[in-house]
Amino acid sequence: MKIWTVCALALAVLAGPAGAAEPRKPGEYPPTADSIPQPGVKKGKLIGPLEFKSQIIAGTVRRYWIYVPANYNAKMPPNLLVFQDGQRAINPQGPLNIPVVLDNLIAKGEIPATLGIFITPGNTGTEHYPDGLGPVGCTGYACTGNPNHRAPEYDAVNDTYARFLTEEMLPEVAKSYSFTSDPMKRAIGGTSSGAICAWTVAWNKPEAFGNVISFIGSYTSIGYKPATATTPVIVGGDTYPGLIRKNPIRPIRIFLQDGANDLNNEHGSWFLANQQMLSSLQWANANADLKKVAGPRYDVKFEWGDGAHADTHGGWLLPGILRWMFSPK
Image (tube, rainbow, N blue to C red):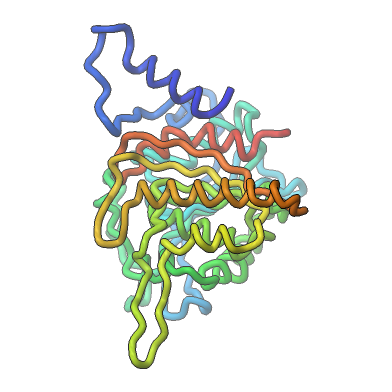
């Protein structure tokens, strides 16, 4: 059954029989059973927070957590899931609650053993990562307490963060835990600017990550800086639809999610930007088919909801997305 069919059925169940419940409000996506701790399910180990100081992104300090599945076996390297804004991704009161999702899906055999790495953006001007960023009890998107180097890392259309991740962060984790080197058994994800960051990593390093989870992605002009007399223009994420159309297809599988009530401000329209991404990915495939171009095609699924700039809809979809990306074929 397709992911969007499951979602439609779930919404129908939530609404109940006619007149039996209040109408569902836009943006309401209650967590599914897969996002809630279940009795009898073996829990993986969440290690952290750990601190890391990057040399590639100089002057930054960040935190990260490692999720080690209950069935971890170093001799059988597990799949890998990397998620940006790690402090929000692991929040037990938040809508993503990814460690619990992994516990439940792995226990049911619906995805293989999967190692998780949840990374915060970097923070500058401090020797150690400041306490109080991303409070545990905070569930709304606006109260995340973002580190101060988030936008320069996540919204940049270059390979700096991809190099940090593949040359520094993954080797650091690999000192203690094994994980697959197969890009199609690796996924990278995020929400908002974390989503465009995930796409940028796969775009620059498809040999490292073949799957992208993109929730309310900021494919907008946040990173744009106009040219000056001494510096060239710096492009923003709104250039990606054109880059996708004019570059060879990468072997990437991506799930795009956004809501009709997402942001619309000086940086752009988030909902329109995500639709532009989808259109470009689909056009690239169709054009390659028409011209009989050999090579990969983008593997794309999407879900448009009625939410605002929040993680709620993405959290609701996440179990189905992981099944699609990681379920044994």
